[in-house]
Length: 158
Image 1 (cartoon, rainbow, N blue to C red):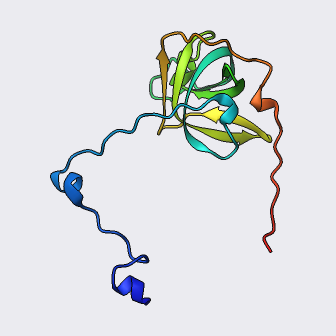
Image 2: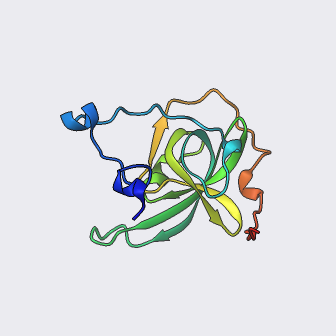
């Protein structure tokens, strides 16, 4: 065992506590940092993006809507964007109903999924899709980030 770990130094886990921890108070909520579509990069997550829905196409509809005990699976690919560019957003189940063309939505805790070498924006169970008041920007449709094809390159460190 190293001397730092014995003494509770850099190698040891820090103790939880302090005024907020002792009182049982919730940590202060952070203000969301909105990013623009052209700042999105492959393999990143935790984005908060305000976008306008340009187009929405249902690509998968499974299950019977008539029976309540069978869960229906719906997936739609929606072209969303802001004044810097567009990207394809993969909407699942209840999200499909919110993604109507010309609607303005805020995607909270969104992540970038890679699909056939191109970027897709997605919001899983840890995120949220909120419909908000119409935005004033015009979507820049000639910069579609989902049309850029990425290739996985393994870098050998020397």
